[in-house]
Length: 251
Image (cartoon, rainbow, N blue to C red; front, side, top):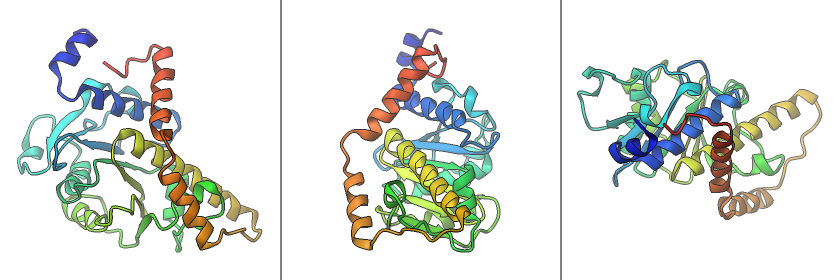
């Protein structure tokens, strides 16, 4: 089937293309882990219907047409052919069921975010512009209870009730980022990994950290919250690079 026909016959095509680009770029940055991480995107008003990657497909091979369309309120999802990964359903289904402000949800076990999540103190001090971006804008889950099946997913969803807290540092696990769309969420995921890397590498020097004041950290975070068009430009350029390479992501 041609791309034009796919656009006509598959719902939510622009959203699917954005999602597929984010999967491909996440793999390129080595922020994925084998076939076990997941992204989802709400496509209806209350956020309960969402797109998500198919079960155990490598991020580098995901196409726009591959994405599953799921209903968080459908109790039969896991009994149907082509069911999603059960931990992905437990985590993402719970969030889309209970957190309508979480339009897009990205969960990875990226290296530096996971190192941060493995520290006894998983807080991220504002030591530069990227770390300041997340000042007072994350929650730390310090009650890891095993794989994210339904009960664990429900517990995690309960920690995301504050719309300002758009990052969950999942202790002993990884990171989960929410946002208003694919561009917003992927941009936040990218910068959180960069921020975590800066902090971990700074700790490795053994030298005292130059921590920003609360006032400057909050000012910087607010400025970055409202920086015009940066997230959209980031995703636009990712798609331009993939297109120039004749990638098949948008099929």
